[in-house]
Length: 335
Image (cartoon, rainbow, N blue to C red; front, top):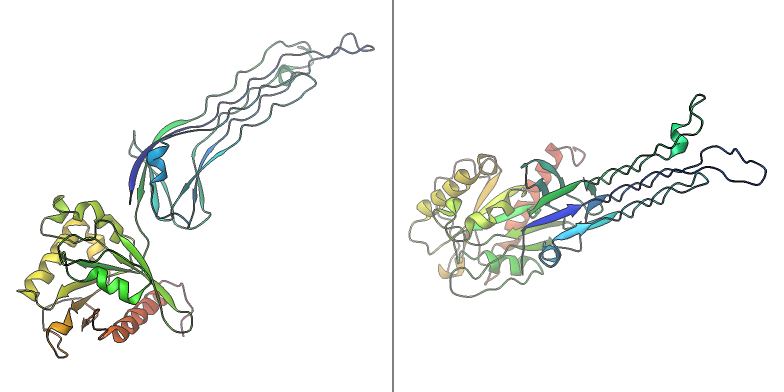
């Protein structure tokens, strides 16, 4: 089951209280204060885990609570700090405070950490309050309460290329042919009910990641079909590939409709580089690239995933564009 939006309650540990104590030794009858401080409460930490691809685990456990700090003790012994709690999430997870709407951060890499609820500070023992004029203090501090937060986790898949198209445009078939991914494929609409990721392997260890997004229908940005639920997963892609079946009734209308849905959802998303891929070329029986008005598209290609036609050319073009974008972003040396 693919879960990409969950609500979790995080309760950080309360700090331990300080101790009131005085030295009692055989040869020091008037021993001074020796009450130790309380330990710090445990933090709640979100950590990226590349082995995860969904937020499913949080549907089984929606309350995470860190350990409280131990109280201070005599002989100036500080209480033990509470253990932190680590919440593993897949890279691409955005964390928000559900009550305030504040965006706390996002996890983009394996091992990246974010403290989402801080443990309470331990209270001071009476040793802290001793002065030259106040040599027998009995004051102490209680530990601070740990933060309590209602969190919202939203997963946005990270991919280099997002495949966008209407139901049965051939997205899943293409992904299954160019990568090791095995999405469900059938001859009826909406066979893809959750996003799928596939790693495309080229020669010389060159790889890039492609995401297959469930079919986008007209009105997807308003919640029709599955579009609104999964459009978020193409927000993090570097570029988009609009897939149009070559047997479509009107290629131009289908392209324009897909562009409108993406634009209505996010102008930033619509500004990403994109190309047009006509699928099911085997139905034509010959090589053919329809002519449509696609302003801003860096290329138009026709392929047949089932017939393995045009795939090498398409993958090479995608890689070339990704390389260009990475150099422009400073991720690779120029030249």
